[in-house]
Length: 167
Image 1 (cartoon, helix red, strand yellow):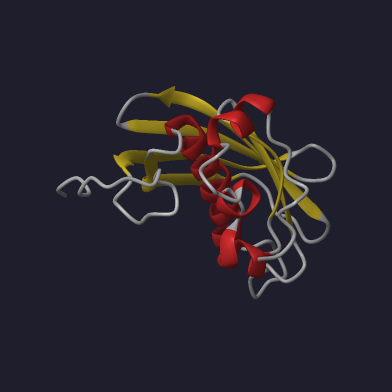
Image 2: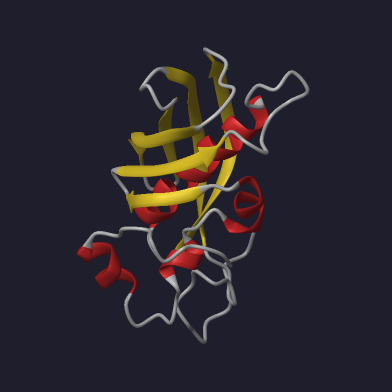
């Protein structure tokens, strides 16, 4: 699915997922939606996720970066952080997102950085700052993810003979 191999993972993350047969760069990528937007993940750990989004191709009718594209970048980065925090036996599902758009961007690339505000057993909240190429803040976002046990057959679950947990 695209250019996932450039994502940097700390050694302890690689070790945690080793032996599960899981392609970390693909699992923690922006996915097909993110690929369409041009999102690239540069760094990924539970404590910090960094990614970029090109403005070109992601504008609204006035030629400005679309707020939905900023929200997609923020949710992608924060979700990756929450997934890494949760580990391979859980999935992270976004349940609430808030974005404040501070300034317009017409060209170039924006960079998002997600850092944890709260990391618990059943939820994780990440703050995301998106800046333009001059380092000016474009958007501030916050995403909360519910952390749930991975059901049998999920890509993130370890192979097991046990029945999946009840919903």
